Length: 200
Image 1 (cartoon, helix red, strand yellow):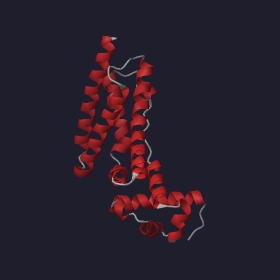
Image 2: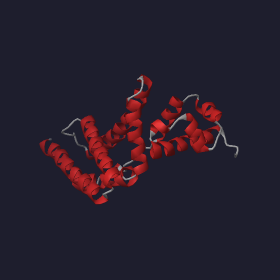
Image 3: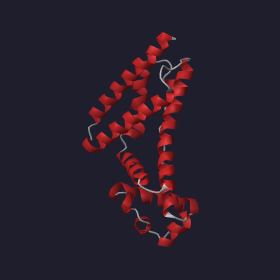
Image 4: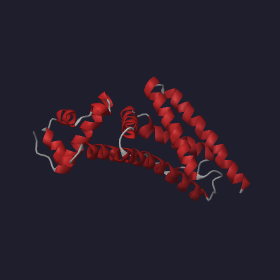
């Protein structure tokens, strides 16, 4: 077994946990199973994380959020800007089956747990809301607009739609359907945003 730094070993164990969770479900991701997947002694998992809860928390923290380059959208009409943003989202994470399965596994598994587990689930979903909210606020600010709907509500609406599209995509693997739904929602959202600009 190659000698790795503690940080590299932690990354290796997180990756092993993700592989088990996606392939077999998070309930199957016992410390013993994770150690087996990573090809390390059982004690290595405890040494690197102290507990399975700490490892699962690290897995949740490892999930990257999408980044939208708002500056590239400024010159576009609202509908084209939002369609472009949703396409960028889908290219980054929406169509990543492994990532989406992991998120759903984490959220359902952790939500059934104790207070500490539910806090990890809340943190995970709040990060998703925060990433979208930041993009919405930056877009509105760059255009000098006051949004007609509370940005926090818009962020939650966007996550509800993108998660729903991703979940359906996991089941039916229909890329065209996913794109049509996302782009239709983007155009509907553009109407709402532009209505606020007209009233201002």
